[in-house]
Amino acid sequence: MTHYDDEILIAYLVDASLVGDAAAIEAHLDVCGRCRDEVEVLRAFGETMRERAAWDEVDALRTSPERLAQTLALNASIEKEDRAAAWMLARYLRSPLLFRNAEIAAQARFRSAGAVRVLCAAAYKLHEQRPRFSHDVATEAWKIAARLPEEHPLRRVCLGMALRERATALRYLGRFAEALEALETAEALASGTASADGFDLALVWVGRATIYMKSDRLQEAIPLAQNAARIFREYGDDEREAAARIVEGACFMFLGDAAHAARAFERVIVNADKRHDVVVLASAMNNAAVAYTDLRQLDRATSYYTKAIALFDELQRPTEAARARWALASILVASGELPRGIAALAAAREELASLSLMNDAALATLEWAEARLAADMPAGVAEACRTIMMTFGSEGMERSARVALAYLHEALARGTATPKVVRHVREYLRDLPSTPERAFAPPS
Image 1: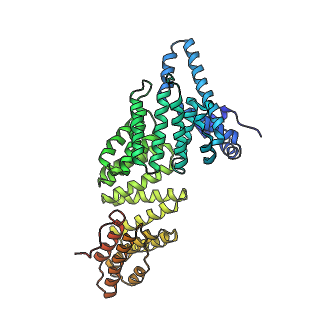
Image 2 (image 1 turned 30 degrees about the horizontal axis):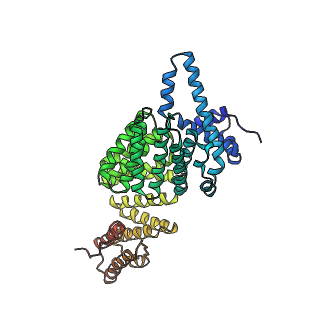
Image 3 (image 1 turned 90 degrees about the vertical axis):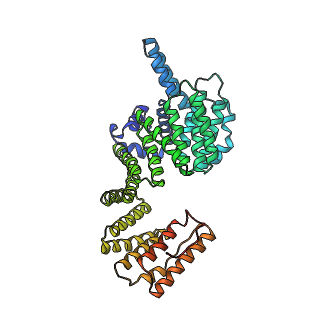
């Protein structure tokens, strides 16, 4: 099999339009493990060259031809170390079981900064889909960093890098206290390392902000996310800036501050559009639409939902698209366009049910019933509400939901159901997962 050389692969990673046939390269990478490993090494090397330590050496050495030669030698040494580590680790990273049994940190041949960098890069890619594996990989990277000689110039940097990735894995696993402990140590290492700078600290801050957001420590999360976003922007790291802004916007939404949330998501939209990151763009537009709906700026919300739906459909993400179409139907009703809104809600509840999103379908059905009653069109409402099925995470919530639905069914049977009654039941069921101890009470 013919393989691509580094020059072509580097050009492909920098900008696929620089190579003659990017599709051919992608097809080759699907079947060629050697070139695929080479691409991962080159990506890892790109991350390495983000480290302040490498560029401090460059700045210190580029003042003379002799030092320039030393700089080039340093870069070549780093690249060689990363390439060797990636080559040795590739087979282990393909199998969680093989990786766990290998005891990599115990083997002297893996004790290098390159191995730490390669493992951290691998953990970063695994976090979302395979957090247990990413935790194992990041932990092994930390063990290797801890075994580097005390005098190694990058020992502290490697320790901090590994701890950050381990903290992210712990966050995905829901082990927040351990994740915060790892980040605290990583921040101390970054603060006490001459070669570290604001970028290293920003990586810690955005990790901590994300955990605070998930732990309802929203006021603590916001300044961390904002400061991290500012530093990422200074470094030109648009992807990480967007990630920090998403955390910021989400925190403001949870606090009920839709205006600040909308501004944060608008920044993400501009950022993602510039990078042609369709996944982030779709999510940011959807989040901005939610914020503008809360602000009663329904025209802007409609525009963003419409754009988000087109992107979700393009990305083949039917769940997100269905929920956005449901939200658009709600906006039609809120705007007073009852006939169109009722029809759109009917379509939305059918689509949600077809995707087995039964709780969403139930809530959409109740919203449809409320709109039908408001339009003095009660036909079919009682029958539709009798078919509602909802499931919750505990027997207590299941029981509370049945009580609320029984109250609604009785009101419909007696002919005393009003839009206010349906809305009361719908909002209770909507909020039940976040307030599971609240018993149902009829509207006053």
